[in-house]
Image (cartoon, rainbow, N blue to C red):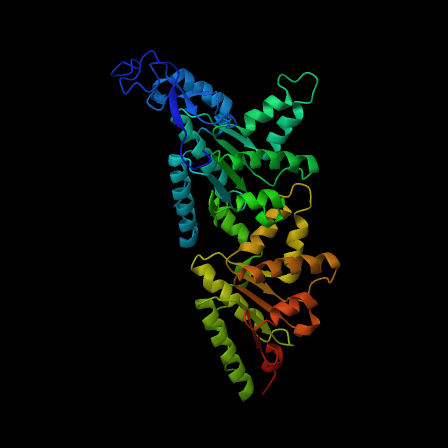
Length: 449
C-alpha cells in the first residue's frame, strides 16, 4: 500500500492448490474455495493478519453479507444516495454550476471505481457533497467492501462514549476500527467542536490513514485554510488527494436558493435598465459626456465582468444606483447568479440570522454573499459604522478581493472617507476601476429650465 500498489494476496488455505478451478466461484483457485484471502503485507501494515473477501467471489450473490455490511457502514439512512440519483440538470442551475456538478460527479465516480488515494469534496451547504460521498460508499458496498460512514461530530462523540463505565467497546478497539477501516467516509469535517482533544484525535486518525494510504473520503464546507494546520497539509497533498470544489446552489432546492440569493428584492429596481438610463435631458455638456461614459463603462462591465467597478458621486440620485441595478438586472435576466443589496440591508440580513427560528445560519448567509459570482453593494458608507459592521464588510470584501470575484460598489463618500482597509483595496488599480459621476442629482436637473 505504501508504494501505491495493491498488496499481493495469499490463500487462506493450501488445500486447493492443485485444483484447476475454485469450488466456490469456478474461477482461478485464488482463495482455495474459502471465499476469503489474506494480503501479503508487512507486520506493521493495518491489513496484516486480517481476512478479506476474495475478489473473485462476487458480493452481490451473498445477500446476508450485503445486509451485514450495510448495517455496520452507517449508510442505511443514505441508501438512496447513489450516482444514479445525483441531480445535475436542475432548471435553476447556470451552465457553470452544471459544469461544476458534472466535474464533481466524474471525479467521485472514478474514485469509487478505483479507490485511489483520498477524495476531498468542498462546497457550501447543500451542494451535493454528502450525496456523492455516500454514493461512493454505496457503490463499494455493492462490490462487497467494508465501508464506514460517519459525520465528524458523531465520530468524536463515538470516541468519547468509550470512556463511559458501561461502554461495550474500549477506546483502543473503537479507534483502531476507525483508523483502519478499509474505506472511511468522514462527512462535514470542520463542524466539530474545536477542542484540543477533538483536534488531536482527528489528526491521529487522519495521519494514520495518510501514512498508510488507506482510502478516505472527506467532505467539508469549512475554509480549508482555517482547519488545523496538520490536517490541512495532508488534505492539500496533491499526490494523494483528489480535491473537488463544488460551486453550485443548494442541492436540495436550487430554485428556492436562487430566490434566496437575491436577498433584497431586485424587482423594486426592475425599471433600472441600461435602456432607461437618461443621458440627454436637462444636462450640461460636461454632465452629458460624463453620463454617457458612465453608461458605456457599466454596459461593458455587465457584458464582461472582470475585477471591481466602483461608481462614486457626491450626489444621491445622480445615476449610481441606476447603473448598478442595471448591471444586476442584466445578469438576472440571463439567469446568472447575482446579489444586489444596499450596504445597510446587507448587514441587517446578517444580523437576522442570529434571531431564533432563522431559516438560515450566519455562516450560510455570509458564504452566499462572499461567493456569489456577482455581488452588487449599493450605498457603501451609509451603514452604521459600528465595529461589528465594519469588520463584517471588510471580511466580505477582502475575501472577494483576494479571490478576484466580480463586484460592483456604489458610494456617495470619497474613497478616503471609507474604512481604510476597504479603501486600500478600492484604490488598487490592478483590480478596481473607479468611475466618478459628476452630474447633478436628478431632481435638481429636472428643475432646470
